[in-house]
Amino acid sequence: MSPSPARRRVLLLWGFMGVGKSAVGRRLAERLAVEFVDLDDRVEARAGVSVAQLFASRGEAAFRALERAEVLLSLEAPAPVVVALGGGALLEPRLREAALERSFVVVLGATVDTLVQRTRGSARPLLAPTPEVAIPRLLAQRARAYADAHVTVRSDGRSVEDLASDLAHLWLGWT
Image (cartoon, rainbow, N blue to C red; front, side):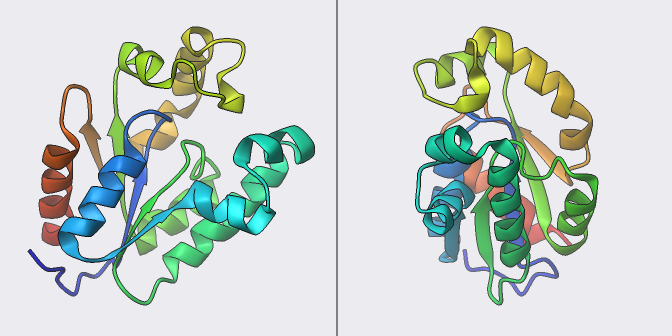
């Protein structure tokens, strides 16, 4: 399946950490022979440090500023691209609005239990004090923003291949 000249050349994969944005996005991009961008990788390249180090040394506000700049650059992509966003990347209403106008925004969702299982043992700064405490709180804070996406797809119990296939059909059929 090859990409069609879609009105929205950018597919933004959004959702909470651990839903599979990077794995699914990478596979989707391979399937459609388009570029894949992991936004955290771009932020790290720009900052010269890991996301965890950036949070520790400069704080969340500095991370969000770099993340915002990378989202805006992604929205200007001249060719089709799949971008895996961080879970908080589109929380700012004006940035979310721009993304919704200029790209196809898909939220990958999963249950709290799935997210706790997938993120347990990771060194993600926002999961303090524990994933069991942080995840339900953050999901509640982000629920309204996530609901704004064009489409929400559940990733619980689904393979990366199945999700990539579904997303390919959704994106290529989006008009």
